[in-house]
Image (cartoon, rainbow, N blue to C red; front, side):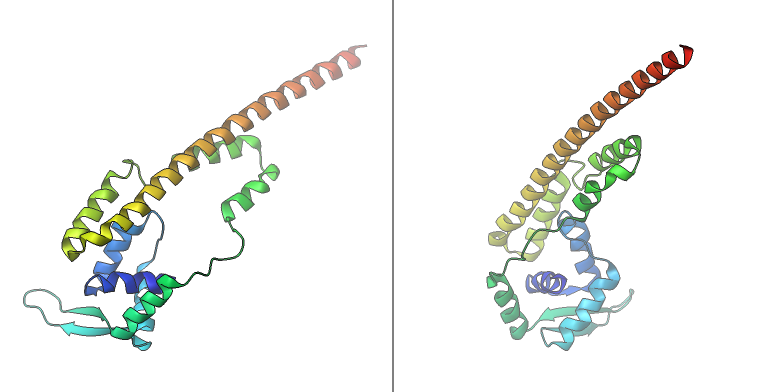
Length: 199
């Protein structure tokens, strides 16, 4: 999947590895992350497949750079992937799997975890920064007709984060109520035990 994302970026215009990494960091991080090592590894794979070419560019006063360009075969592969209607079977969410088994941890620790997770945001500015980066990227590659689709991904990220915050609030409320009732029951049990011992 990462290789097709890289292929799509190069299809929008020739890029260096650093430029690809910058776009992932500034414009795609709300739905796909990639390490520098992963990007360069995939670039090598794409070049070996004949989907991109690499051109060494000498520069005066600064380091030389390698610029990657898409080939006709690479564009064909990108279009093939875009038209692929295969949807992964089932749904996997490692975070929910972990949540399912959190009963083995102290409830106080789990409440603290959900509070931390609630505040962990890709869009701390409600997506304004990502939208600005998309506008800059659109101007740089001169493809205004493609920008609507980039906007759709940002809106998904904003809506998903809203749902995530609301879900975390729900989890915190449920766990705090559970803790209150649990502590209350333990207090009653202790009082009953003390009374019995005094008798």
